[in-house]
Length: 439
Ligand SMILES: NC(=O)c1ccc[n+]([C@@H]2O[C@H](COP(=O)([O-])OP(=O)(O)OC[C@H]3O[C@@H](n4cnc5c(N)ncnc54)[C@H](O)[C@@H]3O)[C@@H](O)[C@H]2O)c1
Image (cartoon, rainbow, N blue to C red; front, side):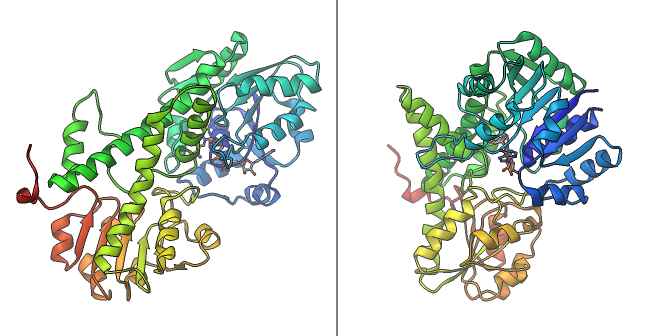
């Protein structure tokens, strides 16, 4: 049983803490946000992540997980200190390391000899050197640092932590790397032991590849629209090829969230400031932005001008099963709609409270039915399951104009049209062979 401290009680920190506690370790989660720690101590959950609250409550009841705001209390007894603080995007795209550096400076005051610091936050390639430098400057005690990038997906974070498809550990200290490997051994995941920079790069390259797959299918969707092909079937046909695979091939309004946007920009920044020419990364980012513009253009055309139009957004969070609004596509879509004078209303099953603070001009509705009432158009922004089973005919009856823009391709076009909608999805245009130019 190891003593583990997790610095940063957010999506990654809490999930990692709960996972390590359930493997029998004693875990202390540390955060500078006092409200957050107070909520956790009272048995509450500051974020929405399926299954996490129950897991933490159960580990808390068994005395394996606790919460604190004090480095002085947490760090001296720790065998492993995980850094899971946020690394947001700076104005120039660079990853902002301020929170990591603050955490490292603070922990350096208290570490005991032989402690292992585990970098779980997504940090620019080369960051481990910086972490080692900060700690070495403030203490002569021996310590080791291991890079352990995280690959969990919000919405299925608990499952992903308990069943990781790989564990990547990068360090020049083989003993420390092995001790972290031993900590995760009960999970029986494939292990990749490597050097720090390679470990850090694996994280960025993985996210960049997934974002590329999405932007790729979105570009194909734009072509399908013009040629009368159905991108959903194209993606299915491609995905059946095991060399391609079906994941991340859903055309739509593109990627967002707490990781892809900032990690893409951070990698682009790292590449260009180190003499590389990241032209593919730039195209992937540009295609993604075009998708937001595309749905707003569709709304403008189908509603016949957006000034004064009532546009309802179905979904606000960046993906289903989370309340996370960081870099959610909805933010950009709202801003584009508002800049054209539309009155924007929205409904989301989990993100309403967060959205209220971020989108003061948007009227938040309590249900899809309320959203539809009097609307000139509805745009599906997040593919929550509850939207898939909506009674479209009923929804349409209370609308002023029945325009449905399916930004996530969740509806059957025939069903939507039979329900009386002018329906547009992404890359699923009705075939119009006579207009297709064949060379
Ligand atoms: N969210 C994801 O899906 C995901 C997946 C993989 C990797 N990551 C990476 O993991 C890291 C954490 O992401 P997250 O989504 O969990 O962030 P988060 O914003 O949910 O949580 C970060 C927490 O760190 C706390 N914090 C900030 N500075 C601190 C300090 N000096 N001392 C103690 N606590 C401090 C904040 O108060 C916050 O509670 C990021 O680098 C992110 O890129 C995130």
